Length: 64
Image 1: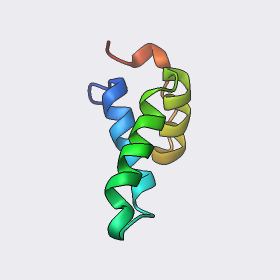
Image 2 (image 1 turned 90 degrees about the horizontal axis):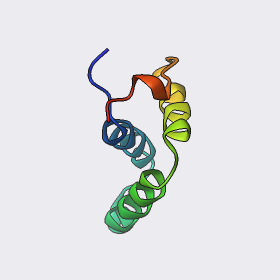
Image 3 (image 1 turned 180 degrees about the horizontal axis):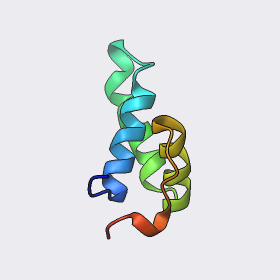
Image 4 (image 1 turned 180 degrees about the vertical axis):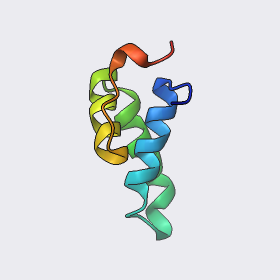
């Protein structure tokens, strides 16, 4: 597994969610989705990341 940080998890989650959006509201939606995820706990990020990549990542393996 590569070096995982909160930032890597956030970017992966946001990219996954943004697959649903296109058009004129894309930039606004991108900012909203990114803001949503950057303010959640590391545990919540790990849970969502695990759903996306089908793994069992824990907060303990995140690099500060």
